Length: 116
Image (cartoon, rainbow, N blue to C red; front, side):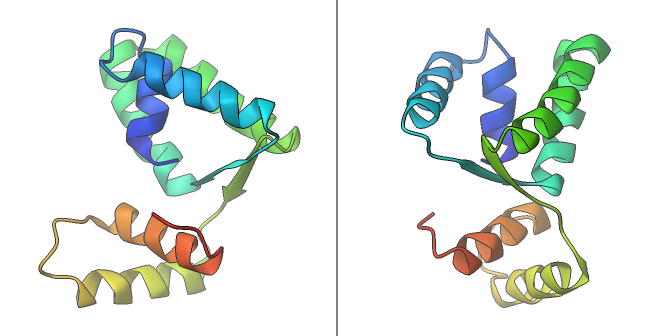
């Protein structure tokens, strides 16, 4: 899940909140794991803090390790090799408006053979 998904999950007034909550519950019920990276979490935390405040951000940042420990998400931490691959991917896609976090997510999806 990218940063916008996490933001929508936490921001009850977000226009996609209900949809994201519903999909999140459906995935949990089906025992399917969300895939996210530490970069997506940091990006989401920045926006959550700005929009919703410190307390909600702390809750979010506490939830992520708990979700990971409970095997509800596949939490990928970016290492040096993944970062290198993401930078190369970013360089090859100058025609897109993707940022480096997006490119990292695309590399992770390729590694895990997931469709974007």
